[in-house]
Length: 152
Ligand code: FES
Image 1 (tube, rainbow, N blue to C red):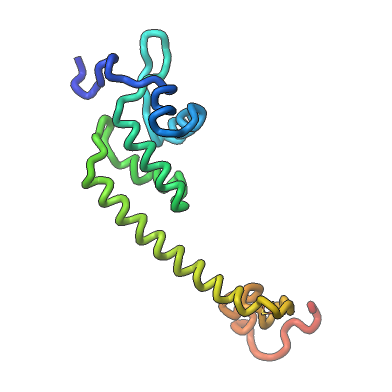
Image 2 (tube, rainbow, N blue to C red):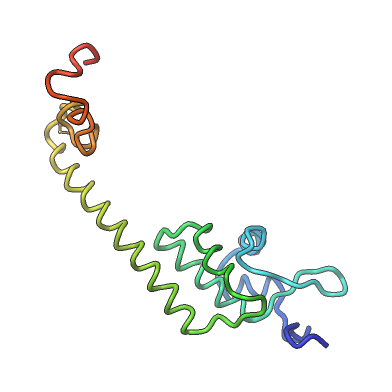
């Protein structure tokens, strides 16, 4: 018997995984179609999951909460060998990477919020002056002077 193959009596049905993880069975199928989790089939060709899948689903849910795209989750989980137990160390490394991504997003969102603050009560929506319409002063890079008189 393959040592990596979980014994059938220790496998979970999709319904059991859904109940324990708090996601719909359809979500499990979706995660599986994206390669984020894996199942085996029993003699009746029904899906069965190892208990390890609960940790994977937990990580997928956390990633979704903090806005990490599923493709990024897939890349991170895809490097783990088949049958790999998702250890605390592996999660520590993943969460560390995602914290950096979250920090970057917070910085971007904070800058956008600050620019939006300048728009509140203004209403000009100027293509030249509004930082949200003209991020990083793109028009300024094209040269000086009234560049949009004909467009405005
Ligand atoms: S709306 Fe006037 S600066 Fe954005």
